[in-house]
Length: 549
Ligand code: F6P
Image (cartoon, rainbow, N blue to C red; front, top):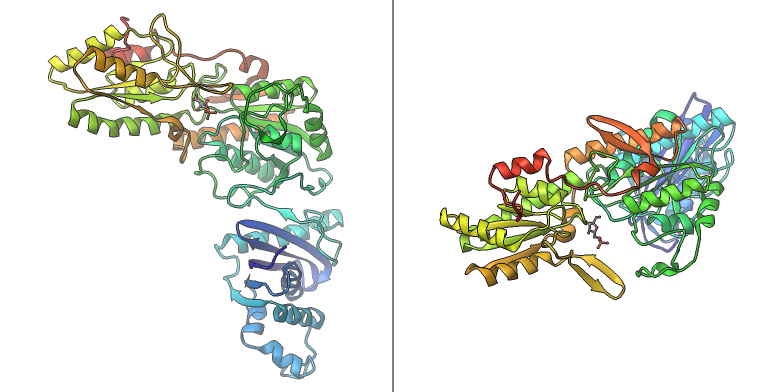
């Protein structure tokens, strides 16, 4: 650990005076947090407060600048009001001439405080300060696990009364530590779940992670191990324990605190994170399975789209108990009515269409807005309807330019000098094919909006512009709908684990959260039905689909 600034939170707790006691500290260096805790058999509350501060300060290199936060007024005042200097000068006797209790710890603390620049800061006991609460929680847990197991603290990270053992890392401000860090041994009787996010990021992933961790730890005393960067972390053993602290404050955050990848296939693995799609014949699924066994993980929960869920099913065939949670902004998975992330993407796209109306109206232009969705038109249909798109083009209904032009002209004659076209990235003209952008071996859907804008300028005397919304549809905070759906999915996955119902994917059916066999879930693509009432409703309010229906 290099010399730098540290914020240290400490707390002690005791069940009786004297009685079994616990202490804990959270040591923050930048965005990274380390937690240490342990217990003593017969001790006092004061001793535990001191012990926490001593053990934490032992962890920083001499010469560090430290802010130490404690809810013990006695400890903080001792330094801020120079009592400790007076005791020392007085031969470790108090003002009343009594020997100072816990002299061993006070004198070590004095040495450690002189070796560093320490600012002692008093926080309110059981305050709303989450790190103070965290220490209190860990210290109490250390007592409980000591009582239950007659063993070290919850992470097994000390001998009774001895030195702290291996560090435990929480996930703070997004990412965990890379590189195959040793996880704490599983406590007897505790069941362990593995968790990873695979495929493209999507609003609501963090809400699912939080729900799995809280659902498992609060209700069933389970542990959750998070693998970083999708299947890559599973293969390379890049993992950390996730507890309620690690997932606190992430419900409304976009992206995934675990990181993700839509390239890494353990059955065909590319080393070094290279970003092409070449096949390697490098099957690392065996390493992935070994890592699960090594950490005593009984079941792997995979949050992902069709690609990740397919991999989940392959692991299941290898005998790994797996549970899938469907994720995609595209909403194209057949076995669930809705995937989380979709509502957020539609909301973002709708807001963008609302804004594009301004330029369309002011400049009398035809504005073409390209949205994501792969080969399904769900985002285009819903955002198009919600944003009042005049023409919606979806892959399920190949369009004809003539009908688009007819619609624009018809609007013009009615005095509507502008039009908004919402086009799915996978849409294409009748007789044609979806458009791709290619870079090397990699092909990505995209470009149809520019082609349409060009064609409109050729066929009419109107100006036309294309806007590709791209990844902003995957970014930002999830909508309340997605947060709730994600939470229900996460909690259901934990229930499936409890029931040992594996090789299943959680899903939404009507208003209920259910599950379906993964095998069923990974087949095919759910696409818009042109005869559905959604499409009919759009038609009824005058929307064109660029095709006569
Ligand atoms: O599946 C989600 C999605 O955003 C699609 O709508 C889009 O076609 C694709 O992913 C883009 O993937 P990438 O970020 O890998 O280019």
